[in-house]
Image (cartoon, rainbow, N blue to C red; front, side, top):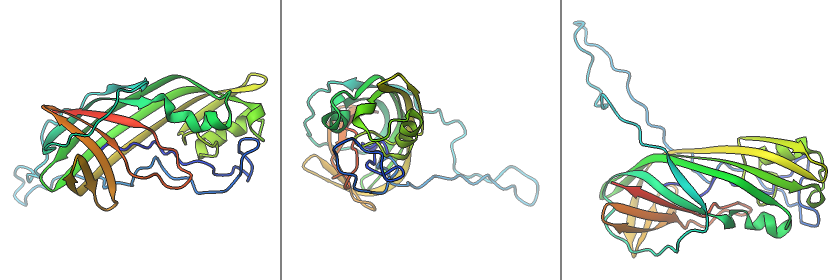
Length: 251
């Protein structure tokens, strides 16, 4: 399944101090987007036989059309209800929704924190048999963040940009890129991040919940004809930021 989390480890001290004013500064290690490292598929380049004939067949498809890139809605998401069903088959990511509650923790600690122009794109495939589910997915996010200096003990916008890239801004994701400009009382930041996953896990399903192993992850899901909607319900690790995402896949 597509991961719900977008590296979203938080509260890593930048020089021991980049935290919201008035909040604790417990140190914790930043992790990549909640994702396991994944098993990267590799394909044999194909060796020729000793007679100089045709290349040895590696079993790889000759023309594999990449899945389309689709928009993921950011804002108010429809209510999700698990209903179960048979997930066996080949699926492509066709949509999804990320709740605007994603930055609720940051706003609780700093009410003037604002995000805007949030754009989320996704693509990928999910292939499930009766016992295993293989996924190869990608999610990208770009956004603008307005971070008031009054909420932090670090007021240099360059340091705040570094904090956004290292996961040191509480309640905000760990981004691959972050560029912040000084606007007086506020740092205006352009941020971007990408999460790629390639995994192949054994799984079981019961009562509308898929549970994968190594590592153990849980997903509530609902199959409706040729469309399946799911959301990950794995308990987040301590001091992590979970991205509340519903994913739609279609045969």
